[in-house]
Length: 296
Image 1 (spheres, rainbow, N blue to C red):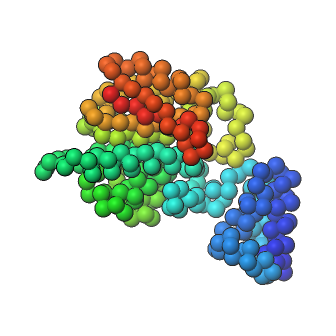
Image 2: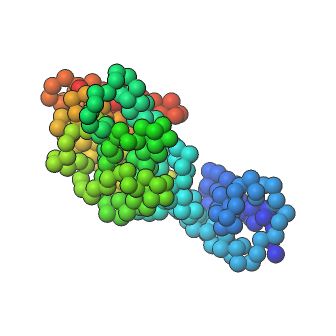
Image 3: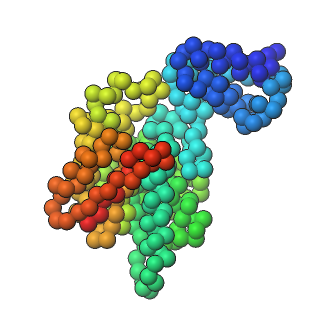
């Protein structure tokens, strides 16, 4: 019967040979997922024996990882904003850089609710997460507003054009007890029947088509339509920006995730809107230009 440490060494060697940039971490996460324990438990008890059934399951998962399948899909979970989100090939895997959208949106809601006193009967702050995927943005924001006791003063809508992704988002909303506080809608971007929103949030496809074939192997397992942004990577984002004059309330603001090399391009896209608009680009957690802030 193999020990925890022996299995980890074996898997680390296999994953390193397969080209993984983090072979030991991958091995620890995968074995922890199979055994149902945290990485700290593996590290602390490397001498513990692992049953034959679990060892077989672990080696099978490692084989899939050798082929490039993302660890998040293999484990079925990814952490985002301190919350655990179910992940599978129905939607893009939540990434750390997207957390900046949630932080900026939360700060904007707090500013609006704690600034000048809100008149009696003032409608809730309307928020839409366009292309919600796994629901990471909408659900994380709802959870953080609930913790601040501000969720009652906000309405959150999450949209996606993929029925499968929307089902995953609903499952995650149930898991985090906010399913009754988020409305989900199937469709392209935002319906014209919706009243204007105070906040428009979106992590839409922004990889240029020509760059798709050069993406790392794990990314190729994710839905292509959630990544491929057309010739310059901005096709879908450009369509969303074009409807902001109708979709965004008069004092509204949009936070749109972009590629780190698309800052100048998104400013140019916004400049083409009728009327007077401003666009600034906020850095992500790594300091790279990542979130376009768009407002009248």
